[in-house]
Length: 245
Image 1 (cartoon, rainbow, N blue to C red):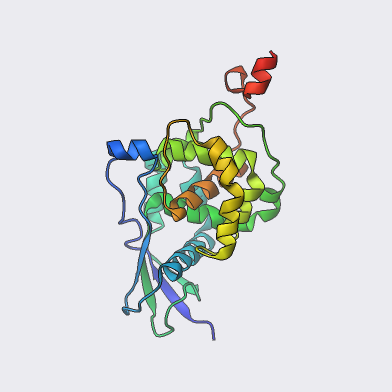
Image 2 (tube, rainbow, N blue to C red):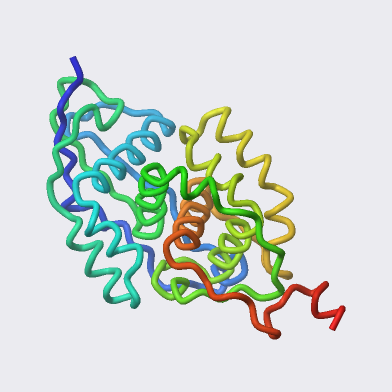
C-alpha cells in the first residue's frame, strides 16, 4: 500500500544563504545543498534526500499550482519571496519520499533558489509537449532577463542557465526528467558539458553543487517557456550576424 505522508513546509525556506561574499562573486554561486530530516530519525542517504526533496517539491506544485507559478513568475524579488512564504505549511502527499512507512511526516529545509528550480521541474513535467517543442536558438553575446533579479542566485549562474536553455532546450529537459544522483543524471549532465563551456561568462569559475546547477537550468527553461524574451536587438545579436553587418 502506498504510504500517505504529510510534508511539513513550515521550515521549508529556513536555509536561506547570507549575503554574497567576494568568493561568491568569483565562483558564481552561493548555493548550499538542500537538507532534509525525518521527524522519526530515519537515516537517509544523500541520494534519498535529494530524491525525497524533489518529490516533495512536486507535491507542493501539484497541490498549490497557482501559487507555485506565482512564485516563479513574480515580477519582483519581494513578490517572489511573498509567494514562496505562502507555500509554507502542511501538504499531504502519497508516497512523497523514500522513507520508512512508520514515519508520518517529514520536514525539508531547501534554499529558495533550489526550491524554485525543483518547482520549475515539476511544472515542466506538466507541459512536456510544449517544452519539447522549443527549438535551439543562436548563441548570444549577452544574456539579460528580468527574472534574474528574483532568483537569489549569482547573476552568472542565471546567465549561463538562460544561455543553455536557449541553445540546448532538449538537453535541459532531459536532465529535468532524471532522478537526482542517478546514472541517467550523470549522462544528462555530460551531454550539456559543451554548452556549459560556451555559456559560462569569461573569467568566472563555477563551483555550484549539482542540485544548484540543475535547479538553475530547470528554472531557465521554465522561464523561456513561460516568459519568453523579445527577439534580440542589434546590441545583443549573435556575434556572427554582427560581423556580417
